[in-house]
Length: 612
Image (cartoon, rainbow, N blue to C red; front, side, top):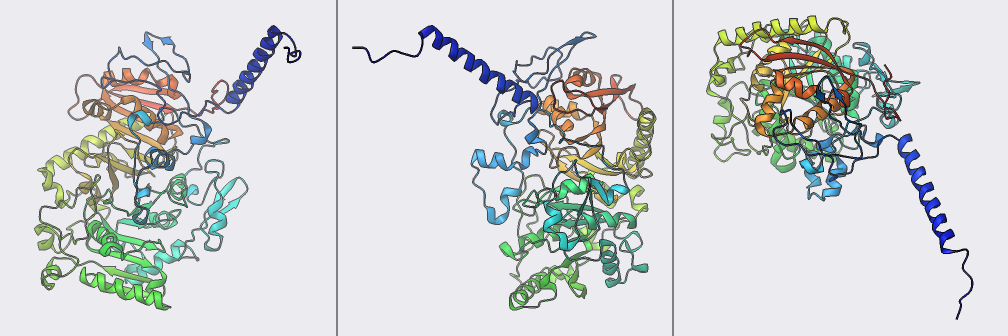
């Protein structure tokens, strides 16, 4: 029996369904064009690269997100998709979405969730990070210390949350930095002078005639402390995690102040022993008493003989019962660590570390914390767990009653005492400086048509060796993040002994920084190195693009086949060649070349047009 007449024939229903489907597809197409390329979710298979990525016969897997592939001058041009705008601030190894999606079991009480957790290769975003809408070329140093473009870091919550502490203020299209902090409302400059006065340093200058050069600022906020230290010839490694105030380090680097994303959690900081003359914590919200004082002992490891720890916090002036309890326990701990109070005034106490092992040897048997085992390498830091123990000095340091370093700036060019750890003579050190000075002079000649005196500020040497590339830039108004490979000689302690800063890293993984934070990357034989490791050169190119500012430069010094490989991706990366030259200076191979490229400004739009 009939149930009633249907609305139209089956043919009409089919036509209607097709029209609806076409309309939906059209709307989705328009939406994707308006918002740029769609996001690439973790686990999506975008491409396949073998370990022989420098070979000219490499195949690239087809993908709907491809930008197209052309042939130009006999070179097959490769393509790389573009991430969704939502990922404009992606830090691959500090990505909370990764932690959530992979259900990592982490101990939040010891800040393990703020440590590095990198995605496996098959779960990486294999795409270029777009700039935020309205992105502008950063304000130049030194003006950038005090203001940045709001469009470049469109986050103003810290200005509201810390308004009473004068961290930052919103001023129209810019964000200003008055120089305040949680414990220095009247400005970082006055606070720094006050610390120098507490220590009776000449003329209230904290560098103490060049004896204080490298500083670690833990929980640095927006790094105004480190920013104001620069005028005293002090360079600070400003350190903060990607926590609830997640844009602190982003602001610091946008301002042109040295900074790094990191946390005192379960693993050693990526710095060798005896790296810093002073460590600083201004209301950094760290429980120094936890786990038998393990975090304070980590600071002790990276402090030089006679180094200082400046601590500004309510416990230092103990106003209530809880503050008194913490102060008493902390005082007892540092006394067992052989620290002494150098000065104490108002909200700040400054402890000083001993110059020799004598105090450690005089402690009663069984004293806590114990000395570290004799087979413990205090300079091993890559993925090494912290230990709640005191790191004694080497016999050389003990006999010298200090680090034996020349004051700054003489220490930059003086052979450091730890040079002998690598079997290097003073002649080798001096030759290395000479070679890199020649190379840097050559680089600047090639760059000269493209840069002015204030074009570059944040520089990274991706394979720093002894730090002579950075030393050769001593007369430029730049700072250098010196990166030492995790699997090579740990020359980072030489770099710190020279009064420079840096970190240990594996370039098979992403670096701990925000996108668009460096003006110049220097890659000396880096691509050849990771080829030997079996890591992806394309991943490295994408990572370099992520951390490079628009209009920034890359200097590649490597084999000719590396340049041929990079050339295949230039169009997809929105890079353009600046100069190519034969490599000269030092023991260069016949096929070694220098290749300099510049990153263009681009936006996610229908044509990915350039907005030069």
